[in-house]
Length: 254
Image 1: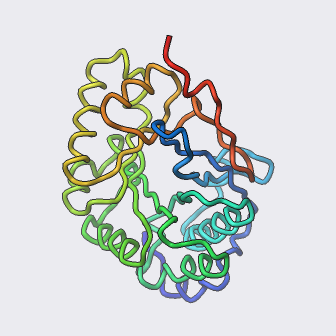
Image 2: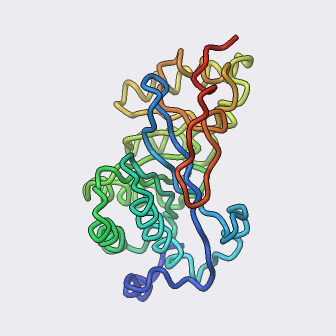
């Protein structure tokens, strides 16, 4: 359900949501250069509790304010950490009333913190049910027009699938971790991941493989031409910090 116009008038009070939360940052790594491409801001409880403990407090009354507060807090946190790589922020499309209005808080947060717009990636999960596909595509186009990068998270796990790609081509598609899990030993998963990588390449979309936990998964995905990866193999999310990369993540497979 989209927010109301009254919600849009509350942009200036974006951080007042009625409960506390923090962010943990997890790196997205370029395996060819061994460098961090981006850090994804993952919502956590004040003491690092899981995202579910926070999201359970989100409802129709505070959804919009929570979505806005997440953007402001993630950008401010990235600036305080001295982040120079991309920052990836998840957003709730069903919290948006009108994209060109609801984006103002984000633009102001980026300006105040001196964080370049082209280093901010907005992710939306494919698993969130989108009732109005064309309207959703309009939201993503508005974000792109404003200078942000766009990403579809958990691709291959949700409702939209290839229809979403036909309506809008994001800058980035993140292949769902369930497709990546044991991909080096599963022929069906191999076929799906290989063809998703080829499809995105033809459409000019960058691919990130999520949930990489083993060297075998890393190497198969890399053989598909995917160089950007995220997962516990490289680093776990770090609360209010940028997680250091594990050196063994780049070791040759035995």
